[in-house]
Image 1 (cartoon, rainbow, N blue to C red):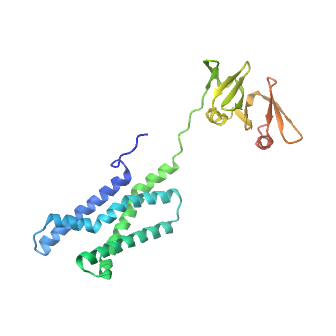
Image 2: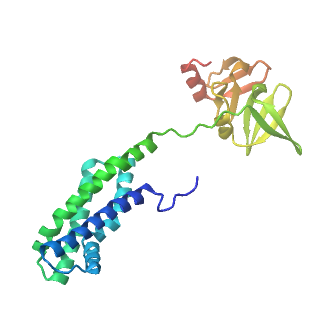
Image 3: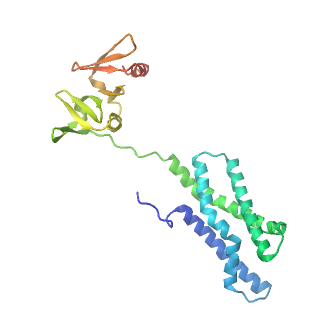
Length: 260
């Protein structure tokens, strides 16, 4: 799957769209205030600087807020914990912005907080609304989507000396783990496949094979009967006469499921 660029990522696209509209609206509002109300000539460069000073810090961390919310949703973090974390972050930003006002404009901390905190809280609510309406449904959909199922294999490509031979799954009587290989047993011969038994089992058609031991699978239709032992283990006798050990746990599990 190709990696998304920054501009294709919905988190950054929503952040850019939302803050782009906010910056433009603030810039126009600042120009109208200076020109229409105060009657001063509007300096566009000063307006841009004012907009960036007012909203820049919150705009920069909005993608991080979105990603943190997505992480919290995935890890089922309680809602109260999320809101407290967000409120703490907004308060920290408001304090930093007030400190900047103290240094640049000479206003007091309290006056700065009274001025900036309602604006930042409103912006935080809009960020939450954007997450709730746009990004959370996408996150829920990705969480609920089932992983793609690998279609079952109907042939097994085995090694026979330097050659490769294809064996139909319906010809297989049993499968045995053998180190880095799997022994594929048919009515006529036993072939080798370089694979783990678990990986091969995941590719086989459902309900056709029984796991009777961590090292053995048998075809259900080839099972003739099971001979239990006193120690709890058992022995599976196939129609071809092959005897395959059945572990104690597998024997009890298969008996409870009514499979043997």
